[in-house]
Image (cartoon, rainbow, N blue to C red; front, side, top):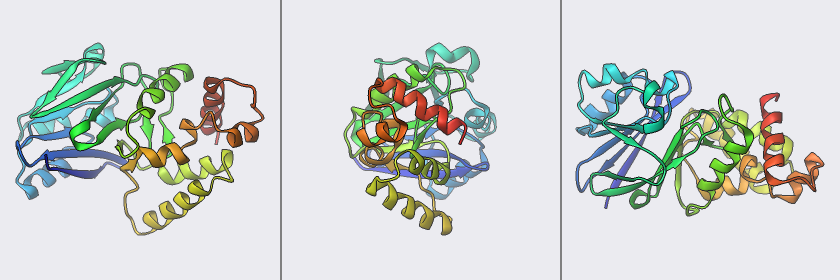
Length: 255
């Protein structure tokens, strides 16, 4: 199968994503911060929108949907457990259910933490994982509703996916995430190199999203609670992985 993935900047620092399957002509949109830039991409490429995935209920991921649906008809996918605070769903999903998008099967994960009932979706055929505000480029979402233990459990689900998985997260936060990451993992050569690359991309007004899971595993401190260097930096050599993660999240909140 041949897929095209387009990252669409929206609002101030949000991203929406279009995944188009050239074989079956399905076009999946992930989150709708605003309608205009998404419609522009659809029109310019001549794609017909078929599915919309809503990862969670926050306004900056759903507010563009009513305007978008004035011009495009699509099936709306979202968490069944969060249907009471999402727009009307055509395809309610939950972790472990079989989600079919055109000719592709997708895997749904409950990644509660940033919000309760936040979902992430992995499409193996395209090697793409849509994480929104759960796993982010060099970070993870702030815990508005869930606990550190919940988010750590959620991230562990995603860490088991193939290293070449493309990670599509919801915001351009990578520069600030890199500055924080270096504060808890200052000797990580891969992180230092990535931080320099991020600075160059942002100076050229280029997106740092999507990223790759293998790179996140090497450099994202929120996935590296087992790492001896980070544990030593935090003076938490005997703590559990979940405790180390919670301390990293606490430090990021106050950074």
